Image (spheres, rainbow, N blue to C red):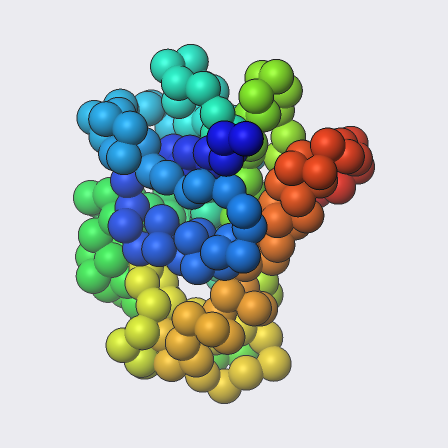
Length: 211
């Protein structure tokens, strides 16, 4: 029997690596849109929420290929900035996935904010489109705060600035193993693991992907 495929609607190599690591125990082939020749597929993320953007990206890929499609959208929400950068997190510095510029702008926006007022949370929303074209969403959140300065060299994105609740180190200091266990994307992907396991076993539980 041919193995099922989970096709990722992202070109972010850091994100692809993280997803593959968390889902590595699943008996399913995890491939990116680049792997099937759709790396040039561009999608306008014009939703007003993480969920809307995740669904937009998943639908765009599902229209041109078959398989289980997965797309996610992640945002960093800072209380002192009224939720910014939020859905604009990837482009906060003006250029998509320019980690340095994103972090520099965040530090500039928070330069006069004391440490006890720098609370924030990361949220990931995953949308999957199953082979019958039904859509499910699920999410994961990690509360924390924004550091005064960049710390650590592991991870990517805002990891050198985000201190998860209950820790003194940033994600970039804690490393991938800890981040994948306690982080926003790891929490969402662990829900996805349960859903895909049920799909592979032919046991579809409609409630497993509730947010």
